[in-house]
Structure formats: structure tokens, C-alpha cells
Length: 136
Image 1 (tube, helix red, strand yellow):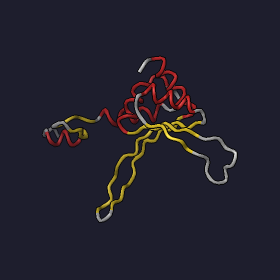
Image 2 (image 1 turned 90 degrees about the horizontal axis):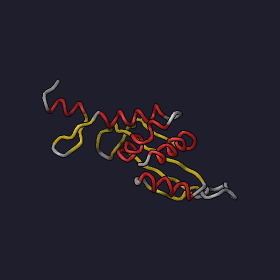
Image 3 (image 1 turned 45 degrees about the horizontal axis):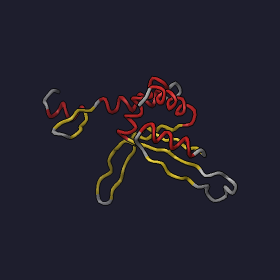
Image 4 (image 1 turned 30 degrees about the vertical axis):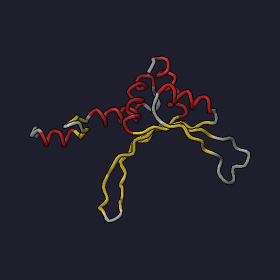
């Protein structure tokens, strides 16, 4: 990503973006519940051209329409750009130095993925990696 694009995106996320980084409990039919992570970045606005520009600049994520709901007669159509997990990590790595308001959440996403290693072609947590390599 170009530096100018990253600085524009960092400012846009500070003002209009939403960054989610939290652990959630997942439940599956006939299986025990387990903890997993919800890692997402998104921007909603009525200007489709800006949302398309974000998608073009980052090269990741999806663009979707978000029509006004019931009781919102006369409201404009919203557009949403959203990405998650490793795509969010990629975007965060590019905009962290250009962000101020949301820098803490961006840094948490970067730290989350920085604590991973590749083992047999699969990405595993540092804890599992150390256990497999008998480092603990």
C-alpha cells in the first residue's frame, strides 16, 4: 500500500471506521462451547465512491450495500467496506503509524498475529508452537 493511501486510510479510520477485537464464545450443535476471536475492520458511509476507493487501495475485504431499514424512510443508501482476520492484520500493519484515535485497537490486532508461527505449513499460536518444539 502506498504511504499516501495509508495515511488517508488511517485518518479515515480514526474518524469513520470501526475496529472490533474481542474474544467471543461460540456454541455448536452437540459440541462444547469454545472461545474464538472476532477481528474485523469496517467503514460505513453514504458515499459509494469512497468505499470503492478503500477497497481498491487495500486490495482486501468486501463492499456491500446497506439499505435503510424500516422506519428510516428518506434515509440514504449506505455502503460498507469490511475485512477481517489476516486481511485486517494487513491493513493494520499499513495504517498503524498514521492512526491516533484507534491506534490501541490496531496495535492489539498486530500483536495478536505477531504471536504466531508456521508449523508444517499451518499457522499455529506461539503456545502450541512452543509445546510442539518442547521449548516450555
